[in-house]
Image (cartoon, rainbow, N blue to C red):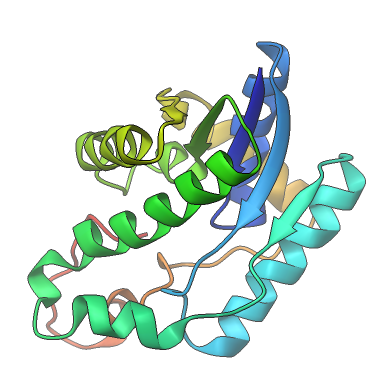
Length: 184
């Protein structure tokens, strides 16, 4: 099965890529993450993924444009819904790329993090799949999170401490701010 793997960062790609390959999928990675801020953070994550993809022979599509404005247009004045809006933006884009590339299915590394909202990701992925006519492959990749985290450290990969969005980074550092477990 030809599968497009939406990837948020290199460390999060380790387990999903291995699982998909073990299950017989021909995997191509896709990096599209306009939510990641600041731009220097975006570049670190992209460069880490590109280096890892070269090491593990993963063909990789990197979105040509950063689309910062699209992200902020989606979440402005709806910050409480930012995760849903962010997932929708990225998974709809991945579904469109999967359809144009004639992939059998698409999935996302967002499903490896215990900090993400899995039920919401699954619902949005399935809706995007129906809209674009390509199957969303759901698998709970959290089972490999701890091992992949250690392996990414052993490989010396850049590891971020927040999901990437400006709001998550603010919550990480701002004194007295309640941390939203839907981020990172």
